[in-house]
Image 1: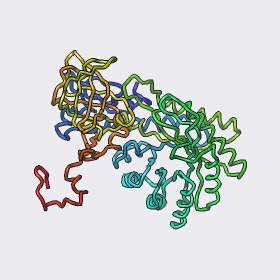
Image 2: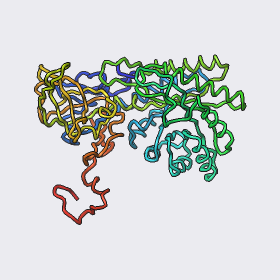
Image 3: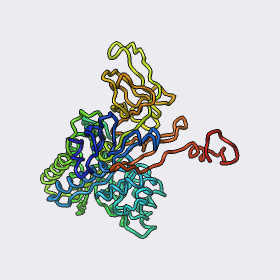
Length: 478
């Protein structure tokens, strides 16, 4: 079963081979020659046409995951008052085509910057189907969001209330807003901690009374329409226990506000953070289980409070785009290193690829775990402990810390790392002045460039000391 729902539903028939299964996208297969295909297209052809490294996006898999969320939450919340909305969290990865595709599958789009907002609008996503987040929104970002008629602006601080209200007044509109609440519960992977999480940059404290004060201030500004409360408790969450605590606390605040003011907020947003399989052995619940679990949480909490249920929204990003993308690398230097470790392998193969922390910072930044596979041919039967590393001038430039790879792996081979759709390209950098890789989407054996590869010319175009045509740069095109 594919992680987070049945992502194979509605996919094009596979041309050949057997699906590799999680953590690979549903359209990834390996042929009799050992080479891997993505949605019917050989990775060797992808490398030949687009170079390496390249982010390869399985379009049908992405669409199926978006559709699975919409259908599951529509079904789970159908009999629960206000229903549910699903916002795709653009911070995971956003481009014009991806924003268009997820919206075509019935999702709204959540943005967290002016650039993400501009991308969603350019994709043709209606303003009312867009949300704007951010703990330090600029005046320009607020003004653009109000002018575009976004469906909601998530307020993250007390001063922001007046700034958004003033922008709405300038445009002669009433801006819909939500108040982001720090509910005192934070989820990270499988651990739930209910204390010491007020000390962070996001949201308004529930325990400290800031959230209640924010609600009162919003209600005092006629330029603002208070939709409801918002929370986000963490990332890579694989069950609903943390959501239950957060939802109950927010619903209690909602009921308290209604009792004091007579205004019952119509919406509640439970944020994102739904987990995926990175190694293939994680127990990732189907999306329908997540939807039914959250619906049950809201139903029981509202019954206990004798309060009508709100319309619920959520913001999956990683769970939609993460498994739908892999990174295709070219192998360069391969060398054996004596580790001298007391535990673990005495000899490890260091496999250097032509990317690294500039296209996937998560391993170096968070200690994230990935796997990798030889995808351009069949490897020998023997394997050895390996570490996939990048080309940057940092000892921490590690893509995959521990993986068994064929012992005959050599320069020129293609290596793929699955589940890199979330935060790979979106957090990519130009460290060492390395151009960022392209994103290429594949469906039914056909490829389309979603984001083109950067060039050295692109990098130099930002350098005030470089003017095209004034000085020859060896090997640099016009």
